[in-house]
Image (tube, rainbow, N blue to C red):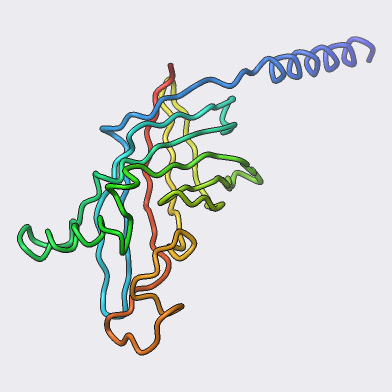
Length: 197
């Protein structure tokens, strides 16, 4: 019995020692492999397109996210649900103007992770999102998979544009908009790929 107890004690000791020796490692976002799809809905339909990250990094310890910071290139905003031509160009221009994202004045947006909660395999990420110079917290569920030197994350992020001063055609501020109503929330489907080092 004494030998068995000693064995379990040593096993527990080495398990704790191994766990305590884990160190957060830096993963840099692979821009070419990372995909961001935005979707905005309105009274009669929706529009969607893509955005690109300018840069980004994650600190990962084992299979846990410890921190992260991402810079979004707002000038990469595209509209992909419409055929190329005048109407698509007009929508891209309108989204780039002051009614929406003021991209000339604010060419980047930023997201900084401030808290990560893990429970039974579920991961909730909270961070500060800055758009048009205004910063507000956003929380979303995500998954993390680390294989070798590659980490992947998948998430659907909901953003309330009103918090960032984007009030155009919002039912929260204007009445009787009819089919010109644009909903306050838009979503971002994120598929992020990052490499160690």
